[in-house]
Length: 175
Image (tube, rainbow, N blue to C red):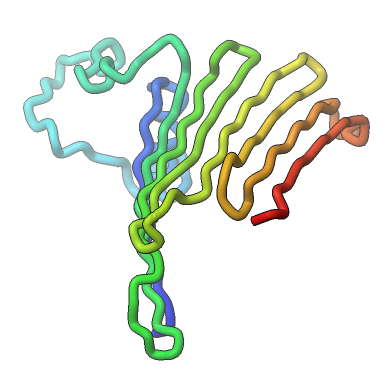
């Protein structure tokens, strides 16, 4: 074996109803029709058959609920390399990505992490997006590292008129 990679992630979100159907479909092999069986929660054996599940929420879910919709993903990645018979861990990192809707028209996000093998911060990016009705504006910034850059874009959303846009980029070539 020359290389292997293990990645695990866990996601949290503030909205229960929108993500519940999507996560249920992912657990059932990507299908919403329960072809591979339904997901059974064996963690809470004290549930009564008379409880109305739609009207009750557990304390953990309520704690993470807010007026601003958000989502967060935590990830761990481990990479093993055996090129030239070196047999060593070439990557061992934790990462986080978070997104939120600041207003119905403004979205913001951040992604970053830390690599324990390289002893440094992994690819970090800040994202901002504004919905301008039939136009879209976004700004992406990678503040440091080999890929330090920023990108500003404003353009028409329509696929037919997608060539009407203005884009400005800066890439730091000094690294």
